[in-house]
Length: 106
Image (cartoon, rainbow, N blue to C red; front, top):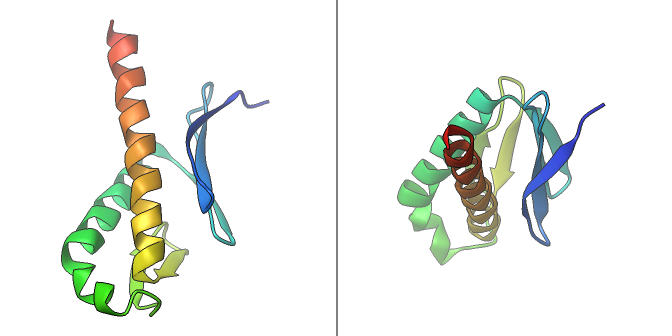
């Protein structure tokens, strides 16, 4: 049975992680996806790239034109506002993961 830790939460979703097995769950909007650490790292990278290069969509923030691959079979199709919310969740979760890693090295 998993012992979950909340890494990030907002009105748009949350990211949790099992302290024992390390699996993570991203719930965002109507999607819920289980991730391994490597998949989370790729999600973080894709989200950061979309924020950098997708700002052209900020002029029409409700247009769902930004694709973020989550796994081999799941892609989130987001608008600019949703991308900002996802990036905030991913950044918060990543910051907490870095703190846990530093504490473990101790």
